[in-house]
Length: 391
Image (cartoon, rainbow, N blue to C red; front, side, top):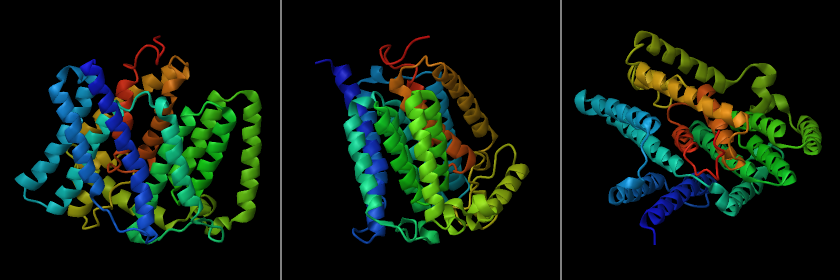
């Protein structure tokens, strides 16, 4: 047996297992805990992440020649190492908050793990049935708890669980985008899109809901033939009429802000951004690490909810490096738009569109999925020639 090929396949399987653990089992268990059906398993996934990381590193150590390292990878690893350095200096050199250290060390460790997972999340079309089963399980879990009077699934909507419904919506959207991208038959693709939009509308996560609609139309323009484009538009019109007639839109969290321009969550985030932008202005080069906690005595979660949260936390060097990485990915998108890539990597581009726009406009540096996507873009040009057309 080819040892190198066996070890590479093991890493790919570990990456798939990690993906399922984080994007399927974790949201499933969290929601069941919210319903009171099971106890809280808080922290177990971080332990599994350490185990996964150890397994991958052990394989790389025993077979170092399978460890790929290019300039793009070096840039990402340097970026992560630099953020680790800031976190360690804050606690061990300056003696500041252990609470902040514990929070941020986990976040940046997830960056590293998700990047390695993304690098090895390849040829996922072979596991289409597995992805489909995971999507069906999460969809059923949400639909059986749907409250038609409220217009959403049962959620404990208080401050403690605000981040939870965002997590449920994000993970479901990511799983749905991968499944839709891998689905070949256009009718099934349309039905999966409609089901995904409906479930996301019930999860109270506005950004994933809106972005799913945008991505659906991009798929419509790029991938569908004329007959299915017409069918998709008809379904969208019917669904819109249904939503308008069925729900009290002005009292709905999903549509209230669009109709009235008022929203308590938006107002809170605007205040958080004003503090964050002031920190950036006052500390434009090095940033203001954990400024929401140290400078303004706010909660740890009162960071800027957009791309500039990286600037505020880690300084100018990090935001410039990330911007350069995004520009490099822009080249991949140009080639993809010209259809120089195989359709087998479409999931990378649709998922990248979702995650990158989400982090730019409404998510903070705490979102590890960004590095999952960055890892996949690291590999998109190095996939075997039968997977990607060489231009």
